[in-house]
Length: 77
Image (cartoon, rainbow, N blue to C red; front, side, top):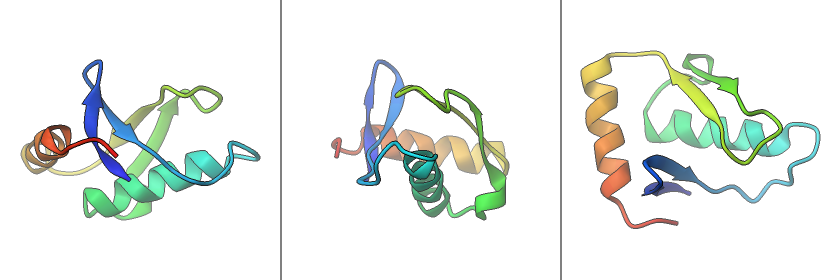
């Protein structure tokens, strides 16, 4: 589930365990779906072993910014 904010960051919750990168992969797939981007355009930049991640989305900045604002306004998962 993606939506809501915490400390200025977008909240992404997944059910997969944090083992062998499965939770990271699930989070990236969820972001890919929510931003309508191919998985190859959603990159984990930092935080692979942390609850807090830095992700790069490759696409039109204006479109991505609007979608981010919508998701931050959505009630959290």
